[in-house]
Length: 553
Ligand code: C2E
Ligand code: MG
Ligand code: MG
Image (tube, rainbow, N blue to C red; front, side, top):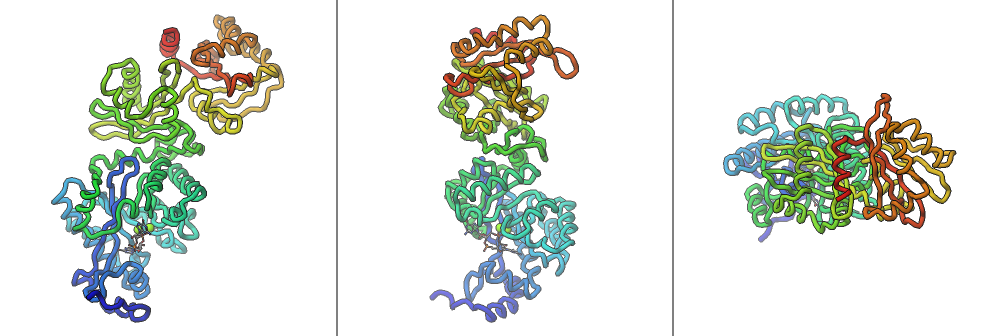
């Protein structure tokens, strides 16, 4: 006939404190597990252990009923030790029964460090149950750090012993950023309050948190994910993991596997864990994503994901997209490719020139561990792809890939000129100039030292002449002046099937030597505006030969 009404207030306090030892002994204290999903794969990659008191008289008590009581009575360490014991037993059981075990995170209270030697306790339990230390994640809330100097030592000791420490409930307290600045965390769990009102503002905040975390080399997980829309958003901004009712509620160990099976979830293979972890370091919100590859890079710029970015995996002769942003999909569409599946299929079926070329880039990126770039012609469109290895596992590798459609200037719009199209060109070119044919003046917009210069005070014709004289190799000078001839340039660009013209000239570089460089002109916006972008970058001689032969095909 159901359970009697649960005690409240003082009666609850008395019941919990008087019965905690018994509850542990009798096994009323148990761990429920809540699954965590990897956003780019949708696979289950971890779970959080959450304490439950399954009372024979009153039924289920949730942490809200007993955590603060036990803290107040200085008994919380008893519960936390019981949970750690439970997790280790369950984990070793799952190792015996299953090939795929995922990491388990658990919660601690700040009092645990005063009331017992929690580090040693965990050490003993994992040894007893043969649990690898990489299987566990320690969750520490930001509020635990407030006014407590000892926490540095506490956190360092976990790291020294090989446990990764996560910051729980990020953003729920008053000093989140301070704590993040001062302590070492592997992952930041973004508090569920941010998803509760899921609107434009909260999305911007979550985006900035993810962007900031990647800049300082901290991984991200969002809590309280309840809808497909939230999940998709997190995936699109590069938040690596999601936890919440959308994936699953906390549940007893026995139910857990059944639940995953019934819902059709697959579980991440443990040998891919580090691989996806490495992929997760890449900041898809950055304007310079290649720079965010070797972990903690500082020099990135937020860019709302406008650069066409994808993560591709090349494994066992197959190409697979792990992630691509909207901008990348748009670029593919402009190149006449409907979907990423089409690219995957094309890669699998035909030995096209394009495929061979792209494959060669991947292999080169892999063997040299550098950014490898190449021009492609697709239909009458010229595009530029760049790839870099970001992670690997014994069966394959993952690459960060940027794809730019150089022939396109429809993405250019007056209002978003600097923030949008130009920024994406900046990842390719070393120098970009805006040439206004109405006035005859030019303005340099960008060079690779990342500064935007002032307006030029002299007409472009004079600038070009001086430039040819000072910077272009004498043998190429005449050709350069012909190429940049302002009287005919508008017509030549307009007539070009790729809507842009390019040519290579030997150009003087910093140390006084000449190197081959590619110069391109394309319309900035509608051609009636009579504004051209003039772009420039260094090229290898082979690249020039190839490009020229392709363009003449
Ligand atoms: P937490 O560590 O932030 O755990 C997440 C809480 O959010 C859990 O509540 C979980 O059930 C709930 N939750 C998860 N997904 C969703 C969702 O999509 N929507 C909503 N509305 N809620 C969701 P729970 O299990 O009641 O735990 C509450 C807190 O109690 C935990 O917050 C943690 O701080 C603490 N706690 C839980 N287990 C332990 C433990 O073993 N030791 C200690 N010291 N504290 C614990
Ligand atoms: Mg937690
Ligand atoms: Mg939390």
